[in-house]
Image (cartoon, rainbow over all chains, first blue to last red; front, side, top):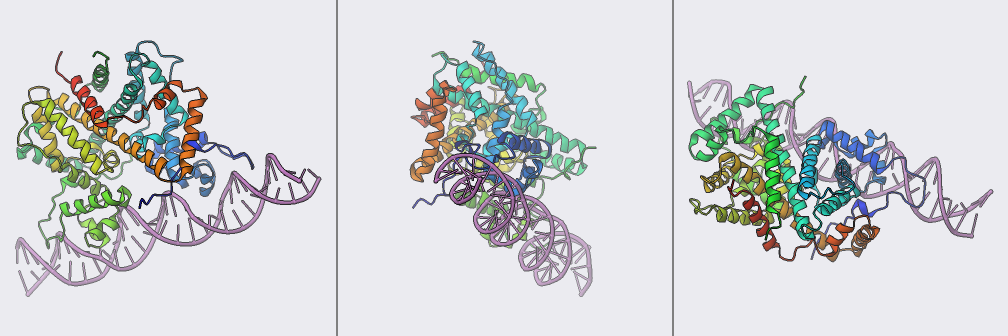
Length: 241
Length: 241
DNA sequence: ATCAACGCCGTACGACGTACGCAACTAGAA
DNA sequence: TTCTAGTTGCGTACGTCGTACGGCGTTGAT
């Protein structure tokens, strides 16, 4: 009855090295770093088995000795970037300050690796259980220990990550929009203006028109706006009742 | 200096029908419905130009008379699902109730179309400016009119959507996890248990272990949890200061 | 009636993920 | 030390993808 794709184990469940046989010429870290480099420089679509293999100087099919599917590559990449978080040895005691700092780091991280939102939504959350992600999660849990119960803390982690991802994604979309509008063919600029203008002039969306014309889509101070949003979210989790 | 992919106009900037020539045999709505049907039944990866064309009974390359790139297809799909929101003629006057209701609808919507998170993160936000999305945005702006200024309202929309998407995504991931663990090969179950067990037993992540063992990843009442999260977010936007 | 613009689509090309099979090698068992 | 099973590395090949190109037949403004 239930037709199931034959059950794929995650990469974290397999040992990095086999007990028998010659030692591999590469490591997971090296492969992840190569894939991240490719994605940073040429976009996530450039991360193909062929390109990554070439990047580490191996044959295409040799990669399958390290990852059993391309999806494993994505898992490796996400965990590798999680390793860029600079975590103190222990939480400071001010949980709000700690979480705000992590949010700042997260924003910078996604700015450095703009492919992260796409990569993460491509994989189920339980596939992102690599060592670096676990270390990050553990730190957050430690930071709110005694203030929030575990279930609430896990919700907060999810929401905080979601906020960071969606905020930076809209930041990047805006940058992309102005880049298209300003830098290149005035054709696009004309089309955009025509469409947006017709939308605004149609009178069917007056409030949206007002918001756009008031610059609602381009925040004057992104840093302050981000801080305000994160603080609002943290407010919402303050254990008052 | 700036090497740019030659500036792609969005589908919303092109008229659906040309002024000259014979009338097309299909419509954007029909194509979007076919693509959504394919994604619902066989997953987002089944939405290929060939499959969609076959679904509407056309040759593959005929699709390019309606969309100039596959990405346009995604834009059509997302806007089509936005059309499933049931919006009252006017806001009720209770902005929190209205937004909570929209969040509920959104959750149901993503449950009906589990490919939506992937589809939406695949496209920049400004590409999702179709008529249905605009109608939704306009309704939210109307609901908070007089309570929040436009810029804050736009932030709230983004955050609310982000919350709905990430919450349902984690819900779906959990369902997937238990499906894998229970339904199919005990091999996966064994691997998962072994890895999670080794993680928990390693002692390096004590708080994460506690959260997992306490069932922190599987909420007992998803509906109530969702309501609580949305209300927390709305609390955070209450115009107190 | 004319003809440029447009709808339709068959063919073809390069890139993708990956199943399969073979050669070289290496570490534990004998 | 010798044997051998298990691993690593990789070339080839298949099916699928997005889509550039060009040739038709149809249409609507002139």
